Length: 207
Image (tube, rainbow, N blue to C red; front, side):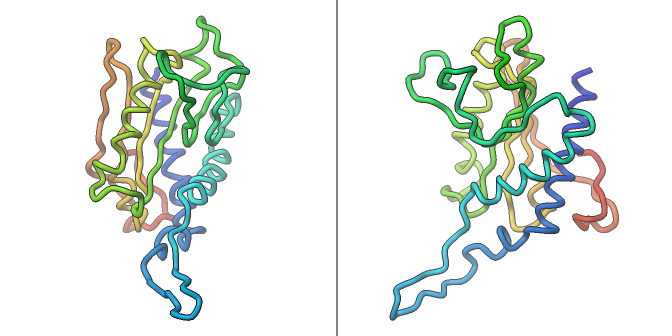
């Protein structure tokens, strides 16, 4: 059952990403490519914030979630658990997941795994870190805690992705997380099968 849900979520996420790269590519592909500093103003072209990209991604994602997941809420940097601070067991600091698909205000033990569907953590190609592994190190640790059935939130799925310069490159950064016998595991997607030469607007096979 969960595999069917995961396949639906994959397709929805891919469609949302395709819309980002079709409609909002200037947020990504031109960011930081040029140094246009002016000696008189000392101004310099800067990178777009990660939040600006995730916001657009979330807009498209919510649209596609309406068909099969309309009973869930999609929230960005949602830092509450009911009316308390969202945090892990043993932690003092709060946490701010990039995107979560969940049911707000429903964290009772009997239904928490049903209500907490998915967490998505995003990075950009210009995020800090020399390699992709360095960029997502903290994100992977966070996702592992979210999907762990021994921790507090018990999400069904986690996804880490990096917004690369192209849609096709971004798909290759997908790492899915599940809890398996109380030990989180991740599955990297190394190859994506594209239709119609892989253009974002043309549709994609499930990966």
